[in-house]
Image (cartoon, rainbow, N blue to C red; front, side, top):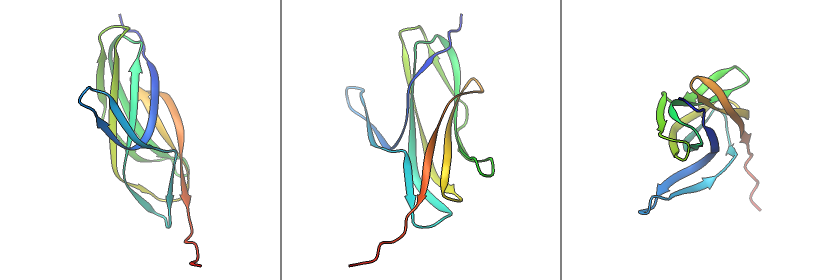
Length: 134
C-alpha cells in the first residue's frame, strides 16, 4: 500500500554539508537574490527537501518558474526516492548551477510529487543600484 508523504521542509540555501555523524548543515538560507543588472546569472543554489510520514516509492521534481513569461528557469530530472515505512524520512538535495534570471521580480520554486504540484514558494529577484561613494 502506498501512503503519500508529508514534506517536512523545503529550503533554499547557498550550500549543504554533511557531518561525519550524518547530520546536514545548511549554509546561507535565503528567499531573495540581489543583482546589479538583468539578465542575472546566479552561480549556484540548493533546494533541500525532507519527505516523511509516507510509504512507498515516489518521484520528486523541482523547478524554478518565471511567472512573467511562464518559462522554466531550471528543472531537475525526476528524482526517485523510497520510504520503507511510515517512520522513515528521506532528504533530497538538488543543486542548481548558473541560473539565468531574465528580469527582476517574483519567481516560484515548485516542488512536484509524482507529477503533481505539491508545494510552491517565491524567490524574489531584486535589482540593486550601486551606492555612491562618500
